[in-house]
Amino acid sequence: MEVKVLNGKVVADKIKENLKERVDSLYSKTGVKPCLAIITMDNDYASKMYVKMKVNACKKLNIDTIIENLSEESTTEDVLKLVDKFNNDDKIDGILIEHPLSKQIDERLCFNRIALNKDVDGVNAANFGLMAMKENAFVSATPAAIMSIIDYYNIDIAGKNVVVVGRSPILGKPVAMLLLNKNATVTICHSKTYNLNEYLKIADIVVAAVGKPKFIKGDNLKEGVIILDAGYNKGNVGDVDIEACMNKVNAYTPVPGGIGPVTIAKLLEQTVISYENKNNKKLTLKK
Ligand code: NAP
Image (cartoon, rainbow, N blue to C red; front, side, top):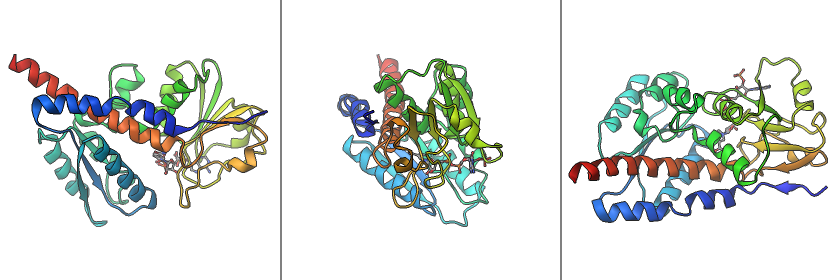
């Protein structure tokens, strides 16, 4: 059996294909570029990498970025003040709070403070609710990326057993909803799940969102399983020990080069959509 690599770079390029044109076209009419504001604490290996990659990707599409790097001692109030400032700044099209923030910060409160129309990373609980109800909403970027990979490679998920390992509000939970909305039979596992291997055994597709390097091994996987590994750990390692799974796997997303680049593409796409929504409204009002 030939194992298929689900190359995220190809999917990301497809998503980004016309974004620059869309930005340039509106920029020529308005003279204003899109702008993404990023709030980060730079205290986490993955966060640092993600912010750098996101800023570079924005540059290529003529999207401006503003980075607010808060000290590790900052308070929830400090973050909320910044979010309010960006919410009220017409130049800002998207606000991204790079997860995770320091432990003392009420991250949920901060996420929920982001104006829905600027929540291009899809972290506000209200956007989660709208998405879950299949209504128009900005979707959490990594879950949206996973669905784009599924779409691009025509992976049939209807009725399939999909096991999501991890239930974080920005990854495990929303991806489970998106999969459910596409008729997958979804099981969400987490740190309190008894006997995770029993669930993995019946999975046609595994979505790994644990944050533990090489956590999922091959022993209990079903023959022909598809692995979608969202994990990104120190040393460019995913949450799945893919070498150990190779004899079972039908297709998989590599780390790096799988879900990561598509996540950034989805963030860019949603930022451009927010920029378009703002400017199209203004242009219509002008007429
Ligand atoms: P997180 O908030 O730390 O959540 C981890 C989840 O894994 C939690 O739900 C936790 O369960 C569960 N878990 C922990 N130990 C477990 C165990 N032994 N068995 C089963 N489940 C267990 O992490 P996250 O933000 O969702 O991120 C997960 C991974 O994805 C990380 O590697 C992160 O770097 C990566 N990530 C990648 C991208 C990308 O663009 N590729 C974007 C975001 C995140 P409890 O809820 O019970 O604690």
